[in-house]
Amino acid sequence: MVRVLINVPKQIRANEPFDVKVLISHPMESGQRRDQVGQPIPRDIINHFIATLDGETVLDADFFPAIAANPFLSFSVVAEKSGTLALTFVDDHGVTQTELAAITVT
Amino acid sequence: MKRVLPLTVAAALLLGAGERRSGYDDAGPETRAMQDDDAANPAFLWVQQGESLWAAVEGAAGKSCASCHGEVARMRGVAARYPAFEPKLNRPVTIEERINLCRVDHMGAPALAWNDDGLLGLSSLIGLQSRGAPVAVEPREPLLSEGAKLFRERMGQLNMSCAQCHEDRAGLKLAGSLIPQAHPNGYPEYRLEWQGMGSLYRRLRNCMIGVRAEPFPPNSREAAALALFLAVRANGMKVETPAVRP
Image (cartoon, rainbow over all chains, first blue to last red; front, side, top):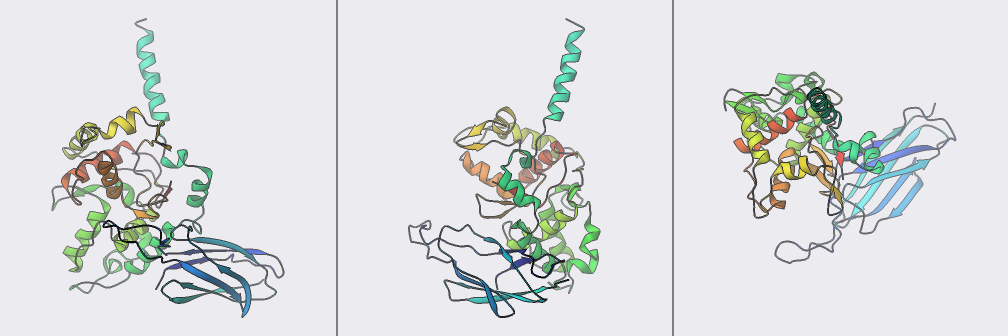
């Protein structure tokens, strides 16, 4: 299990954009480094990230090497009504993890 | 001339006090922005881990940190006093050493390694409770003098002392990087260069390897002495834990 911090504003107005901030604890090993005995360190990055709001995709991103460890993402979302934001990411080991955050529209 | 000299000395002392700069003051705007926004500060991933460990029961005694200490908010101001005196070792210990002593003596759990993410999580969680409070470490002898001596002692193949960089050349550049004044008010901190979290011990270790010296062992008297000296030197500065540094 990877640790994830999701930050959404407490007060969200309908049809007005708000910022979602996400921190994911991940080594994001680029695959271009070698260890102390010269063996290549296999690539281990998050390669795909999808954010959905009540099933509707709001962000779909492919990740590549050269992203620092513990990546920080910030993106804007517009919501019409309260719902659940689901953040799903896949890493090079094929591990898929989904984190949920409640969106409360006032 | 005789009348002017004491004034000049006083002015120089005041100037010296006014010029104490935290690493935050010298960091770039992007790094400062990361530290200012808890949602963007990667150190909070460790704080989150610390929160779950605070309440996790471990060891033979069947206790967690919370069993004795209660809510972590009650630890406000605690980290600002460390390194603090520990009668069992008859010397001041760092907050990480204190956590491990608690684990071994009161929880019956094994001590965590100096670079263990859980230990860093706990110490950053406890440090966070003191954020904004002034560093207030007791200048306890004889360890303080030992630390002061180590700070000015040349070491390693490069034959350099801490003071040569962090006092004499603070504010100048080492390669492309600014040399900070070495105030430990943000530890444990997230260092972008490390792409991870590190304690003050990790910083000391890195500096010592940098001058090609044998690093002091973790939990050693020497490491605690240097930590105590640096903390007393930073007394009165604001705790920034968990800080972000370049």
